[in-house]
Image: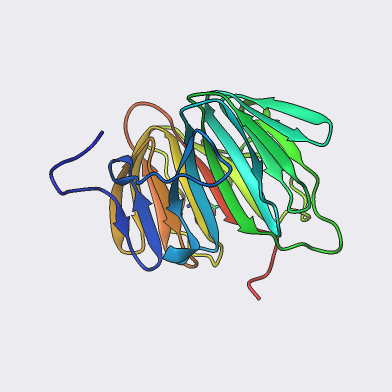
Length: 245
Ligand code: UGY
Ligand code: MN
């Protein structure tokens, strides 16, 4: 949905950003035939990771450059095949894969595939990187956040300090909210999967909905209240298991 009015809900601030689809700018990347990238969150805005929406218009193959970087792919629609060594994994909507820096992975995507690609410089603990991890969101267990049954969290990755980050899906019943305004040094890269509501970021309150992305920088005060009559869900990355220094 293009807007010719000169207005957008996208807002870029020093410690947070809201990125909404009417302002997305698409670019190509070498080695990714038939794919376009919307880099919604980047180091250029101050983040220590990048988050891109990748959309394909033709079937093709690509490889993930893993030199020091880990990657996490979450499929929104279409079909993606991940090939590592002699193994292969077929991913469809809400399937995901974590790729450690040590691994060379080939991708094959069909036409009209959409996925989110997070990449960051992995901070190892000890000598070993985690292995490749593939999963499906609906198969990950859900638990109430601090006993609040209206706010469920699914941890997509195993709870193991070998990972330097978490990827979670948070599901809010209509009217549910975060219990308090969080502040923490960890950053977030978020995509609204369903529903919407009001997101507080720093001293600002933003209406948000499905398809919106948010960057929360270190320490930015953050709170969400879900509105509407259906559940709200978001996918959220957080650097985790590592100290700030
Ligand atoms: O895990 C988190 O920090 C999460 N509760 N933050 C958020 O939803 N903004
Ligand atoms: Mn948080």
